[in-house]
Length: 323
Image (cartoon, rainbow, N blue to C red; front, side):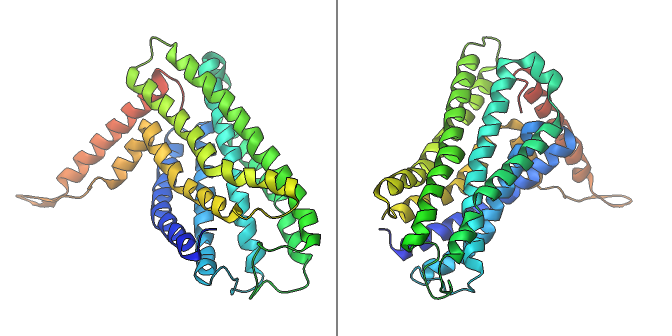
């Protein structure tokens, strides 16, 4: 079993890298939604919000790891943190599945997709995902009330009594089958077809093809590396009727997902790259004229940035017709 020091180190690195990366991703998606919203943009925006919510509650888990895995914070924060922790994991898997379906439909049925795509579909799907994961994870509070002791000073959602295991193990099995393995199967099918179609589209720009294939492969890699070990522990735990000893180690991999998501966004979307470069590029440089100080470069940068954003969006919508 991984020591508390290692767990704390992973949490700190994830927080320091993931929080600013996802904050930048949030800015990029909000800006893109203002320009030309698409269903996938709303899905990826909610995926970013899910990662940020996870990261905002991560300091509580840091404190737990620093306290030798004992919960010394107020008792009510234990089920709340656990609920946020796990619900955002499965929210990510469902949203990634929805994105894969959207992108498959985009290349498999481009004409119908362009005619029928509406941003409201992304909003409805995102709301459905949040409701689904929240209702499934409510059992965390049920388990918390099955013990007669306060969580403060004890293990938080780690060592279970037999009455708790009778609830936890079947629920974990249902979670991993419905909210992980089903999305994994759908994602694998959609992205396999997605890649197959792109490779047989001769008219598609080679750079755009590589970017799209890399996005698909990166998403599947995150799905398998970050989520498979943890969800596999649910199946094994149900079989042996007990907590799996390496479950906490596998849980560490799920936290790294919040770092991989914005990296995947960046390398898979030219519009995303353009929005981030527009944010990070210096905007104010003053020049002295005979009549005074004028932000000459600022004006030029704004024009140039606007033209680049328009070109990027035209390229994204041109050949592949996918976000």
